[in-house]
Length: 83
Image 1 (cartoon, helix red, strand yellow):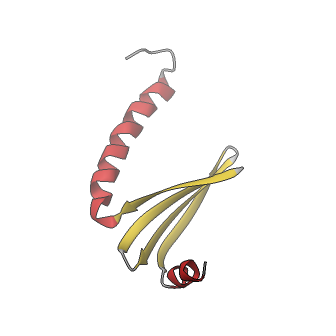
Image 2: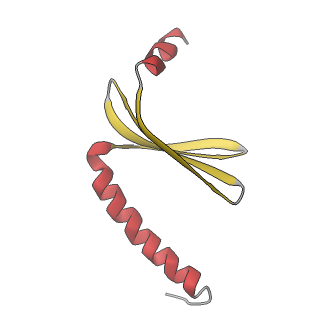
């Protein structure tokens, strides 16, 4: 436990934002630790879950996420459509 507390103190926060959607809250935090810089996306909705993306892959992550969002928006615009 003491080791984890020391590692937490070594984390540096660069940016932080959050958004509330329905009954969920999402946090977007850019941080840095002894392993490097990363984006942590955390979801709170009764429980907590998160994903961590190293900043070295953030452009590819953004590209793929954008592609999926485009497809999801099509479903919002015409929910009965089958692709």
